[in-house]
Length: 94
Image 1 (spheres, rainbow, N blue to C red):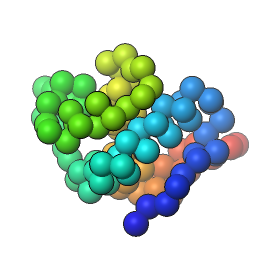
Image 2: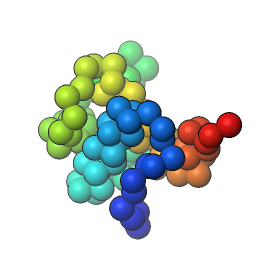
Image 3: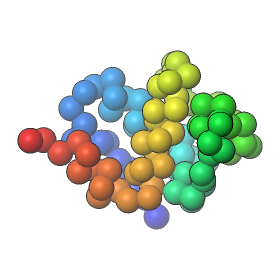
């Protein structure tokens, strides 16, 4: 079970806002396992995949994404739900 997450360890405000929005969408749709296990087709990636789960996820986002920022937050959600501590360490302050 995942808890409310602020991602306050991410210092870039835009990045944090995108990730919080994506995280809230994943949690509200119960897509944690999907992001932990989904492997997009090599020629599609997240940006061009059209699974039911990704369509629901995309519709739930409130942040206005470009194609690349959408793929970016999908990869971040994949990373977070596979291993939250490793995800957090990516943003550790030096």
